[in-house]
Image 1 (cartoon, rainbow, N blue to C red):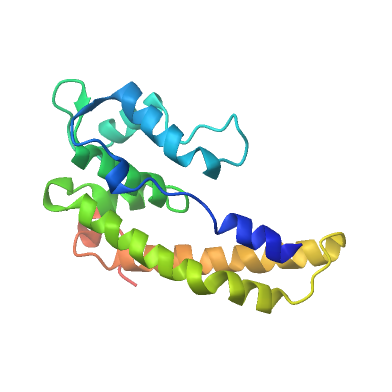
Image 2: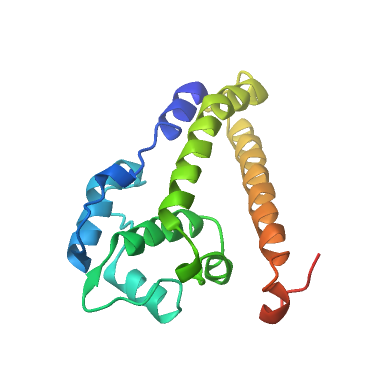
Length: 180
């Protein structure tokens, strides 16, 4: 059963750059694009992956390049995809540290590299998780708690690794973040 769950989780869907139109989109079109291509990644059908409020907040916080008029360019959409991925585990201040200099970043290149690395991770992590968990009885509350504690520990290691990398960015000192 655990192996099936792992397989299901790692069969998530990505919004591929090829799926993004070459023309600029209005906000409602951006939201529709996210929802159509990433809807299978929702925990429940009512979950929102991206909202107008989120996008407006990203703009206010300068996580997102300024929008000219009311249309979002391909670069904006690629930047939103990066923000969407990062915000799953990082604080918005950390996301900002990574994306705020958007005029210097080729988000499409970064996102394509991310997809390539993610595909490689999908190749070996599920098997390693199943091996590490062994035969686990998901009907036993103690086993479930132990397993979930272990999985959250792995998540914490990955988040802390990101935070340490972010703290070592040259701009960290100007943000008031102590170097580690």
